[in-house]
Image 1 (cartoon, rainbow, N blue to C red):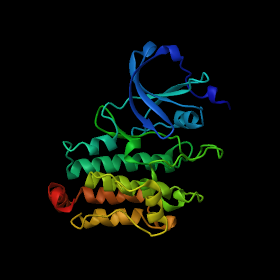
Image 2: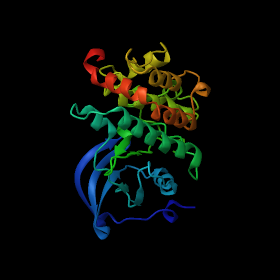
Image 3: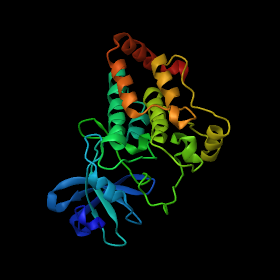
Length: 282
């Protein structure tokens, strides 16, 4: 089946580009107007139209960015998707004015895990994301989290070289080493995103990417979990960062774990106290 049979082809002239709003690993992203639909969309410009469009076209879930179609005219390849008005989770967490409480952290942690569980277990084709990080989670109009940027995902043809720039802090050791990967490489990355939600910090900030890779692979280093972090979150993150991919939890288990935490009133107080005393552990 050719790609053109699956998704809506959009004419480049039907799109009005506005400002650039960040770049994925594999292309620049713009806010734009899809003129004939009178709709604001996000457009990712690509050098080549890989399988990302085909994959996106079969995915449909509230926690996955919605795909509308693609421009398939060489050299203007573009993916047209839903526009998330509140930017990426990474940008949100970087802004010191944005506070999160226990309920908000748990809500977003659950939405990201739900989207990942869909990719691994419920989608028409199983997808291993391989580049899950806070920059690839966007916050939509209604403040829910959605996964985006499937440029590195596992159905990308074997000819695609992974561009490793800048994403080492989120990568499982087996991905860094270009070993065969299973879906639990995404579990590792999820643990890093959970750490970001709890600390508002940039993982391995200020350390060169290759050094991060060396620390993780050769030295078995992990991100520092603040000592005052509620133990249940610490335990979950450590579980995600098991060196042996088979020992890491599947997203089904992670969701069960998060649901248990949701009903723990004492935990909410402990977590909020931890978040309020950020200055101490930072």
